[in-house]
Image 1 (tube, one colour):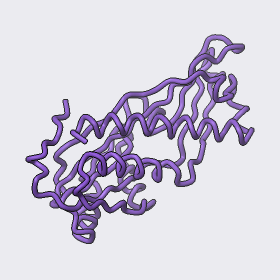
Image 2 (cartoon, rainbow, N blue to C red):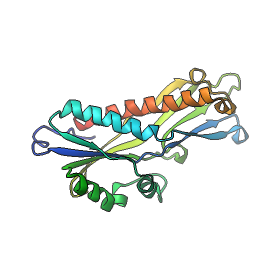
Image 3 (tube, rainbow, N blue to C red):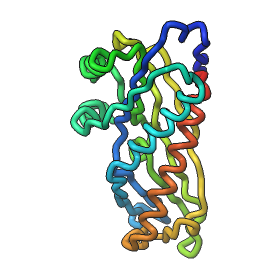
Image 4 (cartoon, rainbow, N blue to C red):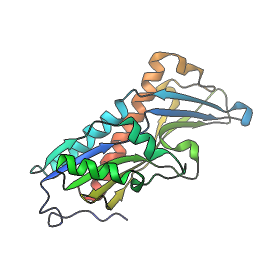
Length: 215
């Protein structure tokens, strides 16, 4: 259970940096009647996922600690790739500790907030994405919007001092326009609705994560 940060703990904090290293190519997977009915496609968020993450966390921190100076660091694709490379079921900030230390040093930040992908025992549900499952071709049912991400808080020496996540979400697949074999994703309007549903869940998850941290 994440313990919220207190005003006393943050008493000497003047400046913070926020970094988002989320994978932009979000998966949409369908699990059907048999393995032969499974399907898997990618919705490319084209930078919107990390922009959403930075905006949400910045807004939360401004509201909770208006006295702080906040620097939103532009997303570095190479750094994100380095963080997410290797063991598929978890990512650790210590993989990119030198880079995060450099960010703290270059921005003069006392704390660094980092958004990163994680996963559960299902590696197809890494990071942000959608999964559908049904035993009925005529009714896809709900789309589970998985939010396997983590908000990590590091001090200026690169040591992780807090870590928090949030819940998955659910939306009727018909609301997005997803069909049984995901062929409807070829329609740009359906693809845009799927991308928007993923970003909406990202917002909800980050709000819960920041709240549990005390922000």
